[in-house]
Image 1: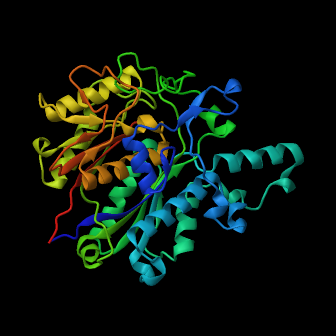
Image 2: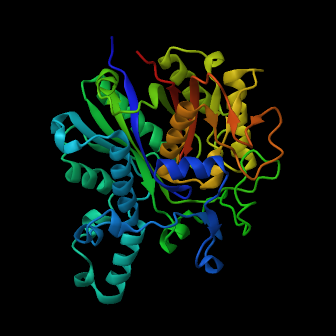
Amino acid sequence: MSPRAVITGIGVVAPTGLGVHAHWENGLAGRSGIRPLAGGAELPVKVAGQVAGFDESEHVEHRLVVQTDRWTWMALAATELALADARLDPLQEFPFHLSVITSSSSGGNAFGQREIEALYRSGPRAVSAYQSIGWFYAASSGQISIRHRAKGACGVIVSEGAGGIDALAQAARLIRRGGQAVIAGGTEAPLSPYAVVCQAGQPTLSGEQDPARAYRPFAPDAGGFVPGEGGAMLVVEEWHRAHMRPAATVYAEIAGTAATHDARHHTAPPADGRQLARAAREALARAGCGAGDVDAVFADGAGDPAGDGAEAAALTEVFGGRSVPVTVPKTMTGRLSSGGAALDVAWAALALHHGVLPPTVNVRTAHKGLDLVTEPRRLPGMRTVLVLARGTGGFNAAAVLRAPEHG
């Protein structure tokens, strides 16, 4: 029988809180971390999902702070939280059995902006020697691997908002190939001025100044999305190994994953949502279950009418006339790019563990035919959830999580 991959540790650094407990409690209470963005009067984005109370000095030594970007600080902190949650000490592990896979979207934005400013202001000698590694997509994977002596198959996935699921898929593959534990997930820090301006060309970016109205996926008058920072890191272990560790909490099994591409347009998904639906069907097939087994869906939630319509079409294709609870808890964080799907997977695993779906906030009238969860909803016996994600560029990903078996 092929080795099975399970999630045993969750580390969150997100607008909904630091650590798994704060994140879960704030999510159930509907406490949004979307608020006015400093300097927003001069920027194309007025509000964003922002991580409050994050002090990098509590998680990253000073010598490393000056070498890296906020996005990597968050990844390092989330990894520490995930390992603590899993009660796993990587220094006690055989290093070749421990891997790191992160998702990345735009890299070290603030770091890069600072060094470019130094270049133009004072010339090449003013640029830090760490510019070559501080902004780079693989910086977080590299720094996590170095800190925790992970010498397995380490790497980075770049597929924007779909990246968190793609990283999880790679983690599950590594487990099936004999790996024992993988640190997987993603974070993003896209709120520095340069990063915000880079996003300004996206036609679905919301210009709304009211945080409660800025990002409302599946609402009839949805006006776009808002960006956010943060994400989640997960500890993924082989099933038997996890169950042999009495201290481990097995949140969920990674039952199946899949990825597709629209191959159509860099920002506009096809209206039929066909490739997103295909990703969902393939993930279900790999999980050995059908659409009728799915108890809930964590939707991607583009936040604009065209993107939401395409996802609704995909859900209809997969589920037909069956009504399935759908939630978009990222309405409390904004879209976190490479951190978004990782955080949704964390939310889904926690939902299975607690038997409760977190809500979609700020949406009262939803897309026709959609059973949108707008208040915490208890689902006794919930066993299977589907997580969907899309990334700018046409990326689609789906993951099927299953409640753990015991005994």
